[in-house]
View (tube, rainbow, N blue to C red):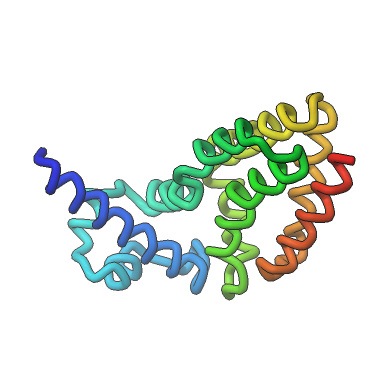
Length: 178
């Protein structure tokens, strides 16, 4: 494959994932069809099936897509010359707040969040491990990191706006880094 073909393929996959995310957040997982996604992405069903074998595979791709690059960027934060609170906040911005901003306020946000846990258990477990790992490196111990993760997860329970979630995370990181 030529470099140009790879770039076009990546761009097409991004367009499909954006369209799928939009459909799942608008109609929910069960009411979204591959036809809906194909129409939203402006492509044929056969092309969609060349990129994703089924709806579950497509949904899995969305979870990974929303976090693409976040873990690598969060890793870089650990080496910055900033306070532990600033590090923890920045990691949370990258891994929670920025992805949250892509899904909040939509008709099926709550369902989407739950469906991620059910259909993407490996990605969900990786997400949990990554946050705990980063928090442990900043806070210094695994138990505090686990409690921090659980508290962090609770901050989204009422599906807040991104701005509200950011304020909550600021308060939480401040309390954990005292």
